[in-house]
Image (tube, rainbow, N blue to C red):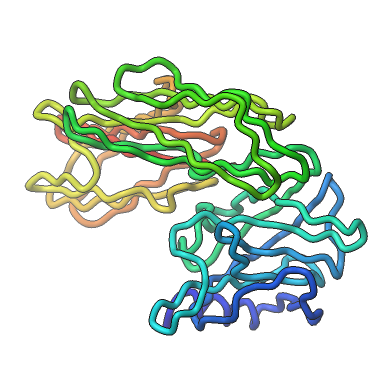
Length: 340
C-alpha cells in the first residue's frame, strides 16, 4: 500500500483529533485520490496560538491544495496531488509547500513560515510519507524562501542554473533592497535592487555556476530586505567541478565497497549513510561547515557486509555541511543540510 495512505490510516487510528468544522474561508481543490499528509504541531500569529475555528490553507503557488479548520493541535491536514489522467488540479510533487492562516477573531489572512520537525519533510510536497511542521506568522513584512541552499555539479566549463524562490508571507509589502553574490569567479548572478513583493506574491532568483577547475567551490547569496527577522538573509551556495582530478562523489564505488547517500537529508537530529564492503576497510570521517571549519571527526574499522554510519547533528546550527570520508585513500564528499 502507498506509504502516504498508510500514514493517513495511522493518523486516524492514533487518536489525532480531526476537525468537524466546515471550511468557510479557504477553498481547496477537490480531492484527487492522491493525498499527502501534513501534520501541523502548532501555529502562531504574532506569538499568539491559533484557536479553535481558525483555518490553515496549504498552497502550491496561488493554488489552494488543502485546508483545515482547527479543532486542536496537532492538526492533521491533507494536500491533494495533481491527477493528470482525470484532469484534477492539485500540487506538483517537489514544489515548495506554502502556508496561509486565517485568524477568525482578527479577520486576518497572513502567510506562515514552516519549521520542519523530527526530520519529517524538507519543505516540499511529496517528500517522504508526510511532513511534520510548526507554523509561525507575523503581520510585519516577512521573507520566506526555498530551497534553503543551492547545490551545483557540472563539468569543467559547463554552465548550469539553479533557482531560488522567494515569497512574501507577511501582511505588509516585502522590499528586497538588494540581492548580491559574494565574489567567486565560478558563480554569477544578476544583481537585484529595490524589488517590492506584495503579500502572497513571489519571485525567482537564478544563480549560475560555471566551474573553472575540478573540485569544490562555495559562496553566498546575500538578500537585504525589510523583514525585521531576516534583514540580511544568507543563502549558501555549493558547487563541484567535475574533471579528471576531482574527488569521488555520491555512488562512486570501488571494487570492494559502495557508499550510499545520507538519509534523511535534510535532517535535524541524526542521519545515516549506508556502506557496503566486501573486505575490512578503515574509514575516516570529518564534517566541515561552509567556511571550511571542522565541526567533528571520527574513524572506524568496518567489517564486510552492509552497515549504517550515523551522523549526529547535536550542536549543529541550521545550514549546509560537508561530510568528507576517506576510504582506502579515496575521498568522498557528501552534502548535509541541517534544519533546526
